Image (cartoon, rainbow, N blue to C red; front, side, top):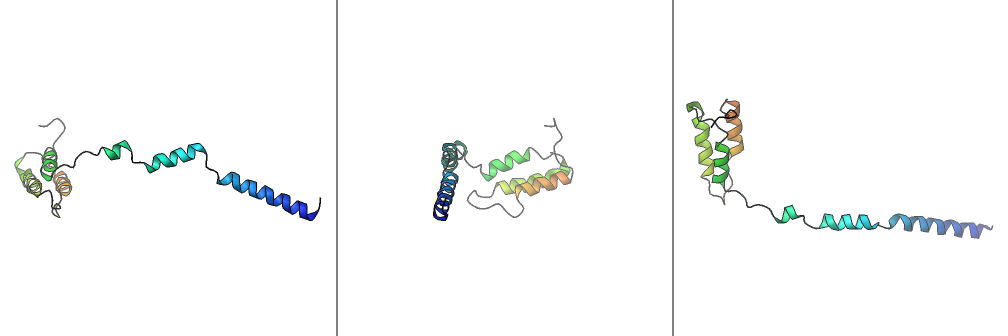
Amino acid sequence: MTMKTATALLGVILLATLAGCSKKSPTDEAAADKAAQPSAETKAMPPRKSHAEKAAGLLTLIDTAPQCQEFRDRLEAAGRTPDDQPLPVDSMSMIVAEAHKAGCSKKPGQQ
């Protein structure tokens, strides 16, 4: 085998190897197409809750005891923020967290 033939054969082997590595399998292409398409969950996003609805839901987590009324009042005030405006710095989740730290979380089974 001459040097020219050996070099040519090596070149053909390298090109075949590169061609084999660069091909996508049908499953890879299908997975890439599926990832590019929005999922059904993304398409059917539920409507956003209003600030009042969020506040009403979070109020159920705070005890109705007199010492907890401050947190309930702050949460109700945050719920009155117009929906087209951002929530105040004292966001609803922060209020609930403070109420929890103060021992104002509703106990399981409590109404």
